[in-house]
Length: 112
Ligand code: 5GP
Ligand code: ZN
Image 1 (cartoon, rainbow, N blue to C red):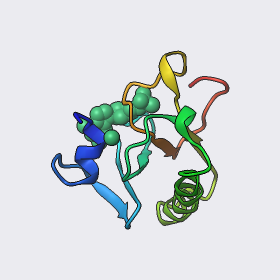
Image 2 (tube, helix red, strand yellow):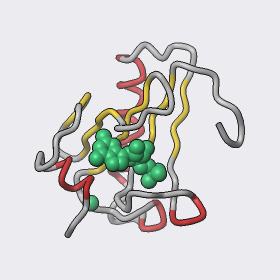
Image 3 (cartoon, protein in one colour):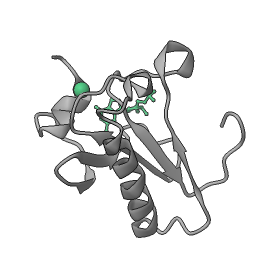
Image 4 (cartoon, rainbow, N blue to C red):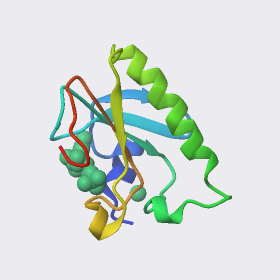
């Protein structure tokens, strides 16, 4: 499968990793939209949030545990944003489930 995030997860494509364990990996976004912009992904290929079900949802809980840990390590004491884009209308460009952990600036709502 030609999936860029699977390749980052298995080391075929380099990325600046900030966290890794058996099931997830986190790395800096190539085009950061905030002073801290980290992508947290499951190592297993899950296409998108729409494919989360009872057989794979444990990794999503783990991703949120890891996000809180990374946020503390990154010093995001004033808050942060976790974003998941799903499908075409959601603006998803890489079809491997990922959560954006963004911080270091004030965000607008719903965009920006
Ligand atoms: P999406 O729009 O699918 O929610 O987010 C995809 C994100 O992946 C974008 O923020 C984009 O900058 C990032 N990205 C795309 N290709 C690469 C890559 O090869 N390496 C890294 N580190 N980030 C990437
Ligand atoms: Zn993948």
